[in-house]
Image (tube, rainbow, N blue to C red; front, side, top):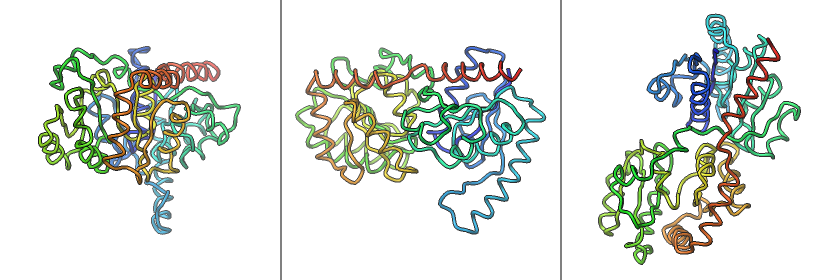
Length: 366
C-alpha cells in the first residue's frame, strides 16, 4: 500500500497526518508512506525525525499576502503542481490524504485530476482556503464538527473526528511520576501553550500563583513554557515555593496527559481532539489570531456541552485564571462532570474511521 499525506505548516495540520500515518503503519506494516510539505513548515523538522519520507515542494502561502506576494504565490503553485505530477508518476500512490494548509493544495488537486482516491481532513469548524477549494475535487471529506457540513458537498462528507497519535491514548501514569519528579497524593495541573509556548499564558499563570497559595500543598504543576520564557517562569515558581516541573518543551506528552487532573492550554484542533479523547478537564484559552478565529469556535463547542472552561485571551489575567483553577480542582463533582462531558465529545478512533473510508475508495477505483 502506497500512501501520500500532504499538508502541514503548523502542528494543527501536521499531527493529525502523523496520527493517520501511525495507524496505517499499525494496520499495514509494509505500507510505504510519503509526506509532502515545504521547507518552511513544521513538517521539515518533525517528519524526518519520525522516520517517514518527506518530499518538499515550492508552494507558498496565499492568504493575508500583498498583491505582489500573491502573484508570486500563484507562480509557485503552478510550479508545485508540476513537482507533484513528478512525485505521483515516480511513486504511484494508491491513495492521497490532505491534512490542510497550503502545502496540501497542489498534491491533492493533482491526485484528484489523475483519478487517484483522495480524502481531505478538516479539523476546524470553518475550513481554510486550501480545503474549501479541494472540497470540490476530492472523493471524501473528513470533518470534526457537524457545523462544517455546510461548507462542503454533503454527499462527500463523513463526521469522523480528528486523528490523534496512538501513543497519546496509552500514557503511563506511574512512569510520569518519575519523569516529571512528581509526588503521589497531589492534584496535577498541566500547562502548555503550544510547541513554542505562549507568553500570555505564562504571564497569567505566574501572576496567579499568589492567588493559588491556599492550594499550594495540594497541587503540583507541569508547565511547558517555550524556550524564551523558561528561566523567568521557573524562577517565579521557585519564589512562591510551588512544587513545579518547568520545561521549555515536553517530549513525553502522553505521560503528561496521563497524570494531569486539569489542563490549561490553547484550543487548537489537535489539542482539543487529544484532551477529549482522554476525557480530561480543561481551561481553554483560544489563540486570538488563529485563521477564521477557529480556536475560539473549537473552545465554544466544548464549553456549550460543559466539557471545559474558557477564558478569552483579551480577558486573561492572573486573578481570573487562578479562580478557574481553584473552582475546578476544589469541586470534585463539577470536575467529574466536565471529564465525562469531555470524553463524550472525544473520538479516539478517528484515524481508524478515516482509513476505512480510504479502503472503500480504493476498492471502488480498482
